[in-house]
Length: 285
Image (cartoon, rainbow, N blue to C red; front, side, top):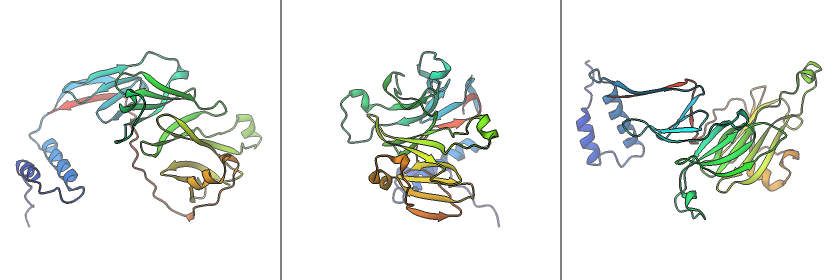
């Protein structure tokens, strides 16, 4: 049997304009990607390098914006040639942005300030400040200090565009304590905030005395996910934890669901895409 002939791109575009694919969810998206793939991958397509830059730090990309210098420089990739949107002043290593999320105003919400309706970058600095930065000017719109007793390092969405989880680095203990065989009971902290304005929901300590042999933990869609050295994964209702006590880090929790020997866990958060490469190039046909 011969190869199945591929549908011409012009015919696909005509069918899309006539609404052939609008009745089924996801079909239009797949069709658009198929058209794009056909245009990009055809042998006759040639590309030329229109812009290249280098960065000493990892490069992040999100929705047409490229972030350099630990998110302090933002470049638009939408135009034919990239255009710098903003560049924040140089800072010390303590003020370096460790992680960031892109926040967009939800439809139908009413806010006190006009700037609240514009896209913002939620950033976490090396010295434990949580910032909300204008995505168009780089101006700091809101800031809050987290804590001094641990080092917060990671940001993620609990509820996308509504609630964020700020995760600390794991407490490995001092070298002397490790040599003596002494372990710190607290593994890490999770600080949970509602967005715009920042309002604290609670700070949760993942303690080895409560979660024996715990190796990691995270929060997603209202579920506290705790991982253990045996490969066991347990899920807890974070809302139930909040309702039971205001002192989250001192409570022994009742599991919402218990034993999961294997689990595939994922989220639909709009977290910025990290790139280990420190070069960014744009090619056009």
